[in-house]
Image (cartoon, rainbow, N blue to C red; front, side):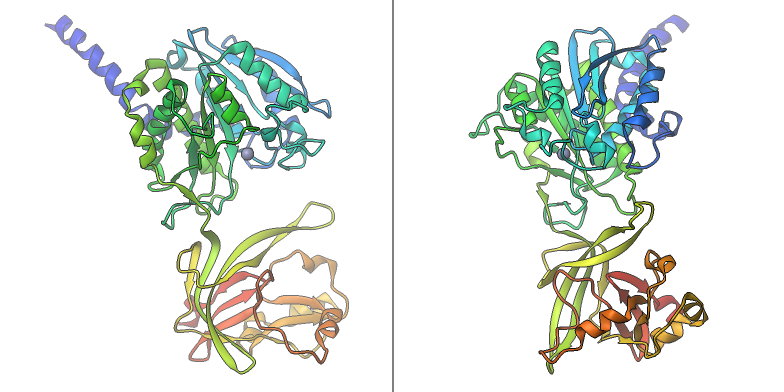
Length: 477
Ligand SMILES: [Zn+2]
């Protein structure tokens, strides 16, 4: 009796393990996270010691494939010896690091879970563009976009990827990127936190077995991401780009899956998105290993919503502002930008109006409806300050209540230029420039950093200082 139960239990257990692998990966992620990579900006010298450490583990085989233009090593980490081969490469664009972080999490997991790849040989190339990563820039050291160099092969980084693909004749390829955080899932306010593409291999967008298999794996990954970021998956346009790697690797016979990590609310360092990469890539690897993906109908791929670009950091709607004696009702879309100081060690955030007018088809990570609020053009505080001590004596909130949004200094003190205060700080020279006899400019302008006040019953509700919103509604009560 005992033996019978045991036999019955085994297939049940293995089935349920398969079904729940993504849940387990998600729940136990912190045990495997590579904690030395904690922010999205890191360089080749941060990953080199991690790769060195892998050399001492029996699980991994490390091969230096070559070097970048500026002589940084590019390595491939291989695991397993199964029949099906999978090649994954990340960060061919130097400022797209989310999947590189996830790869090092995946190594920590694979060290302890050999069962997941028993039918597979896995090959990882983390940070294909280390020269770009050095400055967190998209292109390589000679300014070439590696993802348009698949045919011309002028960059050593491109040759390395092509040679790896050709020598391995990989069955599956994962092309790992980051996309703009302003992408959304079509006709929804949800950011496209993850977007997928099974790239086309011809202008006609035909689907052969190679591309079909990529589509099936994507459908499975989409189902997983939907559990953790509902509605936040987009499907990239499959217009054929004859120069791109994804399209060509598909053409050369490797089922290619493009993963683009986008934005997620309150995740500027992309640490949650990194976790989603970890969970979905490992789940996909498991599915390729068991061939579970083969049962998925290809038509499900087209049911994933398309990517769109209709998201702003802040959407402010129903803003009624005065200009030359008339009021105009507009929505504005603001995107934030880092302004870096000259030592490259500090930055502040400012917001720029990227679109204005009727934005009823657009969305914001943050939203403010100004319908019942009054627009007030801020004034400049009449006293010109001479030093930081004068500034410290002022009560900023009182000034805002009196309608002042700007303080002028004779000479800008270095220590406050890169601070974000709920008041705009300028130099007296900036005032002189605007004093001329031409027609005044509107109080908010496309492409500029807006500063104004929104009030209700003469109380300050919101102050917008160079695109940053300060919410006074709680205190106003
Ligand atoms: Zn990219």
